[in-house]
Length: 204
Image 1 (cartoon, rainbow, N blue to C red):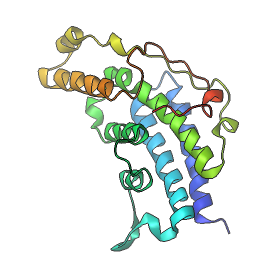
Image 2 (image 1 turned 60 degrees about the horizontal axis):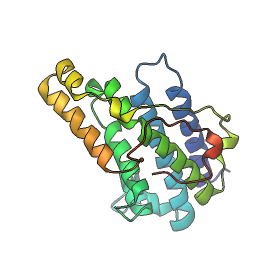
Image 3 (image 1 turned 90 degrees about the vertical axis):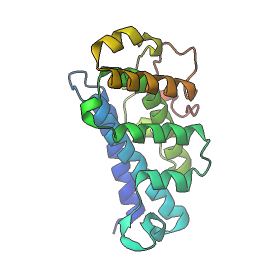
Image 4 (image 1 turned 60 degrees about the vertical axis):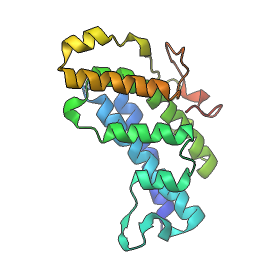
């Protein structure tokens, strides 16, 4: 019988591949929402598998409710205990996006979050290798993921003219907040990464 941690890990792999495949379909309008949902699912399953291996099966359940497992946000705090860790900050940012109402997800959000998505993919591959000795590049074709974005292409005047004040202010606030986290280089203009580089460095 397949162990629970192995079953969770296999599902994590599938969710990761789904996230990348979905993001690389340009005709899909809800790529940001779809990617954030699947990549968060992949992280949650992978971290729970790691927790079971290192802390026992009971570690993924609430002590006062053994039928309920921890959410991704709980797993992040248990595994990555340093709340200043760029990897943890990156993940928590993407969890925030996943929880954002879909009514407010627009093309500008994609421009803001693409660098964090790329970092999240790199981090996932590194942790899969570190925690489970799994190389995700064996499941995903080389160069399947290529993301390009210009962070500075967000124009405050254009956004202010396109959306109501409360929404435009929120968008620019998020842009500056993400920019200040320094999870990507400040001079970042275009990012194009093949999956073969994933195991070379951890980008947060």
